[in-house]
Image 1: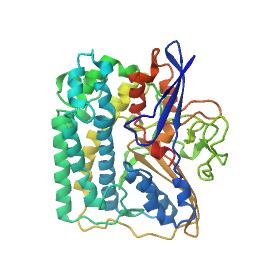
Image 2: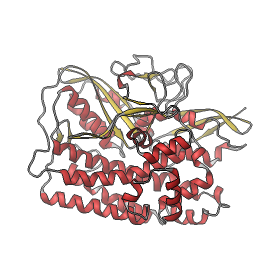
Image 3: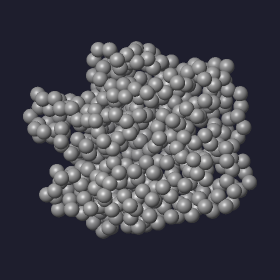
Image 4: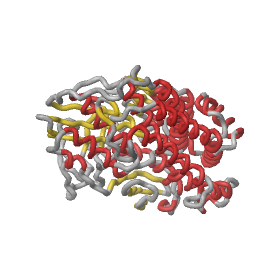
Length: 481
């Protein structure tokens, strides 16, 4: 048995290290470490409740809207108030723009450059992949990054700036859009659609969102000339549909709340049985047996975050969230599987669960789905109607708010007394996916996905490890707050 340490990973927000125990060239066990502690949960204690709207977004520079909206959801639960319909629509547009930008960055900046590595020099697709996707010099970046920047101009119209906007409230957004703003929104979304149909998909969005089976996806890969098709052909050659299987449970807390409910509903899907049910979100617990943390309550509503760098057996600053005692995977794959998208369900059935291929396809598919949704939400805005409901008195007690960030389910738990924050706990998507072992010895989702991988004698340079890790799109600064 040999031990290999892979890290720190580049192209990752924050610090990540993976330890692999390898026997006969196969990973027997993996341990994933979040090695950076930040302490945002302690920063919030003792402050006025509304301060969460200013501090929580600063946890992360790439998913700050998600953190804002989770804080707003907690405050909305504590008041409680009904947000203005226009406010929900504007919030969804801004949130979708951030999540699309995240998916696009992941695809072009974080994930695809690994296929331009010299390790793949003998593959028939390598020369084209290097010219298109190589970090810093690939031609794709010259198209994708300006399109991303233009999409994020929608954030300026709705929220004033990005990241770390202060426009999001429990009752909606603080800026009402004039008719000219709405027209500008439509133009920006139309420009982004044109980029997607020209470059990423080389096909109409409707043709992409209508894909329903793995066979149809294969035909699309061979018929379209876009960057997504290039990925699909590479994935077929490298058999990414057989790599990086997760724990088998997929969780979504519900995404994009509108006047008529969630665009993508909440649910817990067991990929092994196909069983789908309402997620028992009140059965979430945090295990710290292998985290650099002191023992407190397992219930996030009653827990504290107290670091202990001398804890025996600890190897990560991430806690281990568990749902009914089980490790679950979150992300775009979980959202679309729970929502019942036929293509994602078919990929899960054929791949015996979540895999590298399924995760990337779900993220790229969601770009198309959310672009269509932004068009719908913009058309639904009602001129001259309010964009924000007034705040109400804040109740004392413990409350929770959930949203779906690009990487998956994000929860904020807060306790208030006399308008002040007594406790604040955050479980981010990467905390779920990159969690360490729990007291029962059950590995986290990424640790399970790496087990069984054939890495050969020099696992530290094995590109497959990179593909599996990056398929979850780690954001380590959110992991330990």
